Image: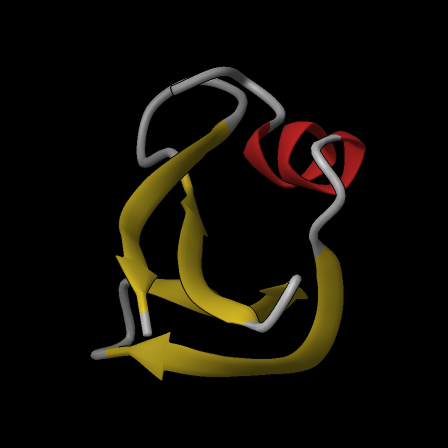
Length: 63
C-alpha cells in the first residue's frame, strides 16, 4: 500500500464517518477509521512505523 493510504481512499470517494485511537500495549498508537462509500463500509487501522518515517496499514477490512 502507498505512503498515504487514507488520502488515496478519500480520492477514490470514501468518506471518514468514524475515528478512534488506542494504545497498542504501550508500543504505539493505533488509529482506526471507519470509511463509507455507496452503501459500503471499510475499516482502516493505521500505526506509525517502528523504525523510520511513515505509517503502516495494520488492517483494511470490508465490513
